[in-house]
Image (cartoon, rainbow, N blue to C red):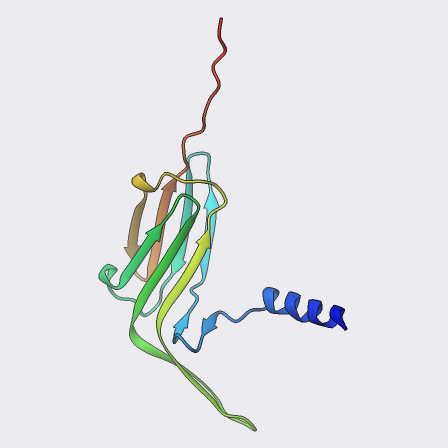
Length: 130
């Protein structure tokens, strides 16, 4: 019966919910793209009205985004079993595809879209001795 546990674990990893009811937070939709010079993370934060409501923490290989919603979002399901969840924040941890230079990172928030530009860490270049 170990294979059943493995299948359930794989299912949970693949189809994990994009929210945490215990923390009343949602995981925002996001996109991570890379260029030769930068890693660009775009995060959709609807119902967040001010950059002051957003908190960012960055390391050389991860970015954590937290944001407070201006208006709580509610999810309700009625039927044989009723559910009601109210969300008041966004929260996500993004593992970056390459190491970045945290000191030169920039963030911009416009119309509910957060764009974080993280310059790639400098690559070490070997020099040939003549």
